[in-house]
Image 1 (spheres, helix red, strand yellow):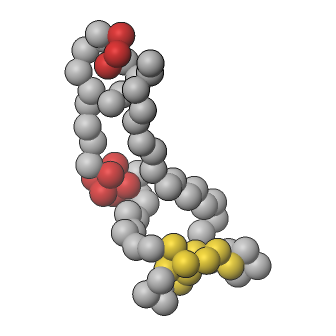
Image 2: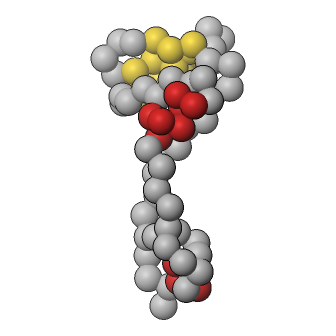
Length: 68
């Protein structure tokens, strides 16, 4: 549910995250984060891949709950 949905502000737009990343020159990587090596500026995935970063955003998701 988007913020505008409960307020009858139209339908929610959906965007494919891989397409958005590609359009901005970023890479969309799916995987399970095992650790962050701050000194090396790398995200370490559970499968052993190490991904360097300049800025790191960890978005763990969200869930909806009834308002009342």
